[in-house]
Amino acid sequence: MPKKPQRQKSAFREYTEAIVVALVLALIIRTFIVQAFKIPSGSMLPTLQIGDHILVNKFIYHFLSPHRGDIIVFKYPRDEGRDFIKRVIGIPGDKLMIMKKQVLINDHPLNEPYAVHAGPNLQDESFSPRDFCGPMIIPPGKYFMMGDNRDHSMDSRFWGLLDQGKIRGKAFIIYWSWDSEKFRPRWGRIGNLVK
Image 1 (tube, rainbow, N blue to C red):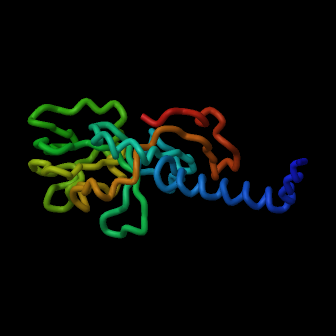
Image 2: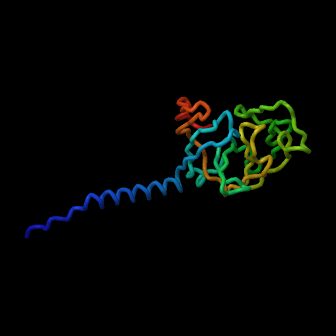
Image 3: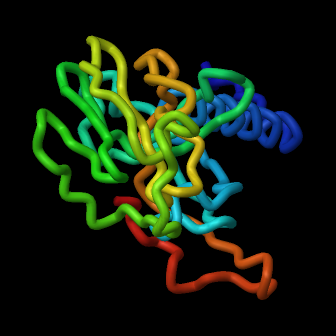
């Protein structure tokens, strides 16, 4: 007996199914694996420039804990509708103190080639925690975060420790960079790893 010919899907239905699958995959990737973020401020200068667009690995911290030196995106503890990006400086179990802008971890100076101090003057600790902070012991599940642009960063010195549950992911690559002052791309930054 001859087989009945199978009905072919209409082009409209094929395109619709392809678009739906693509949207579902994009949503899954954005929610669980990788998300794009734009750098809006200079708190991470010179490591990250205003106008850098980065990709963040949202998957990694399901299996690993953040390490000192990681640059991470997280929900700002005082307004969870905003995302911040800073560097992990203190991890659980650390004794952390800042004396005259120098970070001490477990009573030893932390080597920070990425840190920039734009202002030579020290701010008195009674006025601001910018240059003097601690000592403190970082408890389990908490992290001390700092911007690389130390004199111009709103970070853990001002709003306290970051809870691990507020971490979105680890920044890993600059996929686009736009210089709004010169109105042109920063071609040399595109594709650079974030470290």
